[in-house]
Image (cartoon, rainbow, N blue to C red; front, side, top):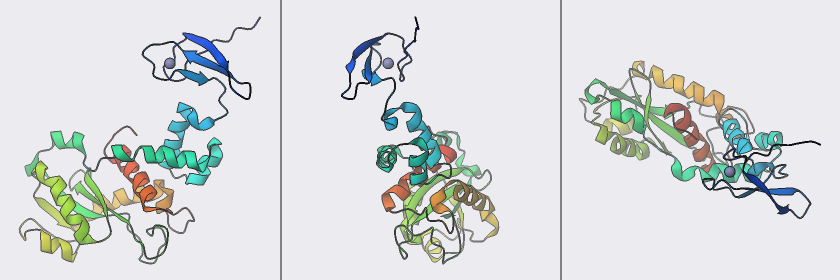
Length: 248
Ligand SMILES: [Zn+2]
């Protein structure tokens, strides 16, 4: 006689009872743990996309240089599942490093603002969907530690500078340095703004990490984003996980 211990894949409870069979004859089980929201589940799910481990793996792959189709093929799930799982995360995305915000001493911080992920002008990766549709992420980071303080999307310099300023204002941050751009000199007071390349080395390192890990930012690849929404979600998730230290 063989004994197989059945565990709930979500809460790992062993209080499991049988709950009929599915249309194709797979045994359905029910978790009786009152604290578990799952209810019934399949032990040997044909639908890999429903398994929590697969969902986590999907997220890890998307943020570690795997394209959407590649992720779907390796995990044996559909690209639609990959898409919908990523889209579910959209609402929870944050643009300010809230944990850092509490420990920050405003007087000691100088903020660098620069485009995240810089490359030659003619490269494909920064275009979403088609050529001529550039999509940039802009980072504001602590000049001394390189920690990303806030992050926004925008096409032009003018578009992103004001939102970044609005995000950083409650932190009491006043010292900014940016690369030479017209927008920054127009919107920042002369005494708080010190344009120049020498202050932006830290942020360039962040670009490199971003470009290495996210396939849709890699140059000369076919894995560029088809839609602005997915592009923003994946890069937003990446920033949330690796720059802000959030769980995604
Ligand atoms: Zn359970």
